[in-house]
Amino acid sequence: MKRREFLSSSAAVLAATATLSHWPARAFAQDQAPRVRLAMPPLLDTRATGRLSLQAQSGSQTFLGGAATTTAGFNQDYLGPTLILKNGDLAAEVNNALKVPVSAHWHGLLVPGEHDGGPHLPIAPGESWQPQMHIAQDPATVWYHSHIHERTAEQVYFGLAGVIHVTDGEDDARGLPSAYGVDDLTLVLQDRRFDDAGRMVYNPSMMDVMHGFSGNRLLVNGQAGATAVVPQGIVRLRLLNGSNSRVYTLFFDDTRPMHLVATDGGFLPAPIALDTLSLAPGERVEVLVDMSEGGAPVLMSDPAQPFGVLPFAVDAALPARITGLPDKLDGVLEDLGGTEVETREVSLDMGMGGMMMGGGGFAINGRPYDMARIDFAVTQGTVERWHIRSTMVAHPFHVHGVRFRVLSENGAAPRPENTGWKDTLLVPGEAEIIARFDQPARQETPYMFHCHILEHEDAGMMGQFTVT
Ligand code: C2O
Ligand code: CU
Ligand code: CU
Image 1 (cartoon, helix red, strand yellow):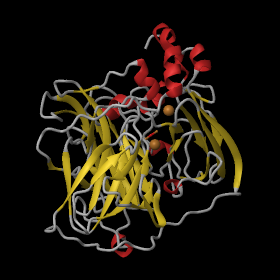
Image 2 (image 1 turned 90 degrees about the vertical axis):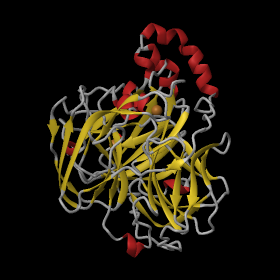
Image 3 (image 1 turned 120 degrees about the horizontal axis):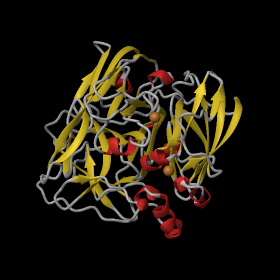
C-alpha cells in the first residue's frame, strides 16, 4: 500500500472504524450444492515413532466446485494433517517445496524460541528445518502455521496451517470422547473470499487491512457446505478459529448448550455450560455437545446477524461411546496472582498518531515491529503481569512460548471462556494477564507477541522478547 493512497482516505476509514461493529456485515452465500459429509484432516500420529515430517507444498483446490484455486498446504493441497503428539522427544523435519520462504510455528506448544518456528526461523525454498524438540505440557489442542513476517496473512490464508493434539492417552479415564472423526471432531473455522467463478481470492484493500480481511463463505476443514455426521451421544468438538480476522460468537440454533472443557492451553477443572462462545483468530476451545436427543442442530455464529457454521446430522448407527458429561476434569489452574516480579504495559496501536508517521499506525507501544529490535527481556522462570490495551477495534492478543491466565477484562472478572489457560485473548478494551516464563528464547530466536488479526500482525502490530 502506498503511503499517499493511505493518507488520502485515512480520515474516512477512521470515521467508519469508530462506528463499525468490527466487521463489515455481509451475509454468507447460501450453499446450493447437496450437502456432503464433513471430512477430518488426515491424522499424522507421531507417538510411536517420535518423528514428524511435514512438507510445505503448493496445491490446487476447487472449493465450491467451480474454478480451481492455487493453494498451499502441508503434505497436501490445502491445510495440513492433524498431528498427534505426546510428551517426550520429537524429531521434527519441515521441508519447503514452495518457491517462497515459509516457517512452521507451533502456536501453543511450550518450546524454546529456537524451536518455535517464528519469523526468525524461515525455511528457504528447497531447504529443510530439523528442530530436535522436546514436548512437555498438559494435553491441549494447539496448531501450527507459517509465520514469515509480512507474509503470514497470505500464507495462512492459502492453506499453510494445521491442528495439533497434544495427548496423554488418558481421555478414557476423563470420560471424554476420543475417537478421531467419530465422536472427537477437529474443526478448523475459516472464512474465505470467493469470486464469481468460485476462486478463492486474497486481495486486501486498505479497508481490509484496517479491519482485517474477511470472507464471503465459510469453510470448515477447507470444505464448504458439508455436514458433520455424529453418533447419538456426547460429542467433543475441538474448534480452531483459523480465520485471518473474523471473530465468531458460536451458538446452536436449538439453543442446546456447549460444555466448555478446554481452552488454548489445556483442560478446565470442570466443564462450563455456555449458550454462546466467542472464538477469536488463533483461539481454540474444546466443547462437549449432547447429541443423545438426536435432531439436526446447526452450529451458528453471531446472534445479532446469524449465519450457519456447520450443520450436524445424528447417525444412530455410529458408536455412542460416551453418554454422560463428566462432572470434573483434571485441569489444574495455577493461581499466579501476587507472584509477579514485573508488570508491563502493552498497547495495541492503530490510529492517527501512527498514521501520520507513516506505515499505517500498526504498532505496539507506538513502535511498529522490527525484526532487529528486541522490545524487552524477561527473566526465565519468573512471573509477569501484562496490562493489554486495544485501540480502535478489539484485537486478539497472542504470546509465544507461554500459557497465561486472565486476571481481569475491562476491570471485571474474566468471561467464563477465558478462565482457563490461554495463549490468545480477544481484548475489546483492556485486560490483565499473568504468566510464568519457563521456556528460554535467545536474542537470535526471540518470542513474538502480537495481534492475531493477521493483516494487523503483518502490518506491524507485533513485538518480540527474549527469555533468559
Ligand atoms: Cu499463531 Cu505468532 O502466531
Ligand atoms: Cu504463536
Ligand atoms: Cu489487531
